[in-house]
Image 1 (cartoon, helix red, strand yellow):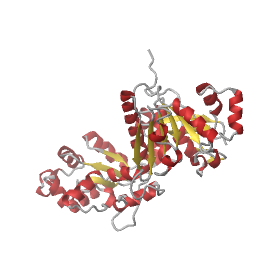
Image 2 (cartoon, one colour):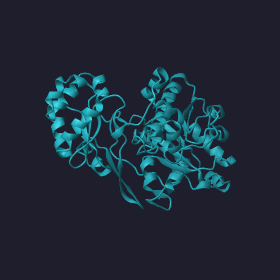
Image 3 (cartoon, rainbow, N blue to C red):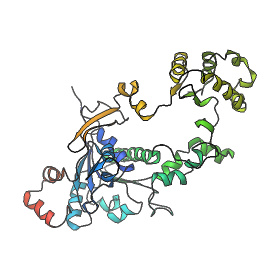
Image 4 (spheres, rainbow, N blue to C red):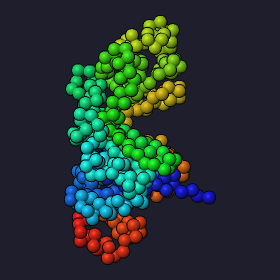
Length: 400
């Protein structure tokens, strides 16, 4: 017997825009949640609709990436009519999810305190740059800014080079995952206790938390983090990129057995008994000589050759792929990590799938909605508004 998708009984009102917020909720939509995007008609809806270079009118490949399997309604919640519709939606929802500046949810009435009278079980999840408290709560912030502020850029890039961001917006995307986790945690508590709550999530908190052991080392042992050449691990050797005859390979030896396998596989058996490399600390202390010896070997053959040799020997490794190679990797296909949707203006869209797996897989995916595409069905089927009521709300400016 087929089972419904895991979140098929969850409805989320998403007052979201751009990347971080929609990235968090798209995984919930993929898992079956009814995610209804509340788009402000005064600004043309989610700004992500207009992100270049692959954009036309109100459609973009950027927007499609973060908003598949959702529904959309244009709603001006600053008007009395729009607010009335919004509160009716809250009565039929499990959560209100937003990614706005930290002080805005309070101003717009998107917090539990302002919505509990409408639905005492509602979960209000806010993802903002700096959170709802602290000296930066009222400031706007974006991934690039957070990567600099949280110390990430000081750790990224080659020694002696300028500060650098990660290749992808990892603060935004990690923040989206944290918000989704917080929202689901809130839903569990609300269903258990019959009382909703607020989730105050921030990109700043997320970025600081991801300093992880580097932060622990610094605060507990006075460690001063520094950039490493060729993306090397800060303490384990060998654990970095190596140039080959035609590209690069990543080799990692976080366990003693991997080190032993590595040197035998590349023909450096004499190093297995070399006291300079006997322990993790010895290899770290004498890392320059060790890396030079490995460089000399890896440069003699292609990346494909060394990947085959090391994989057969059981050494963790992989090629440094470009994006095309990564998306064409056999593992990408085997894990069904590319999905396809059809768009009336943009044509066939192929995009990365969600990595979140629970229960049955979604068989088909729906493209992202056009702005207000689902307005009529939401008003009619979910809220039960008749034609006259919809017309009166339209005239009152509820939908822009």
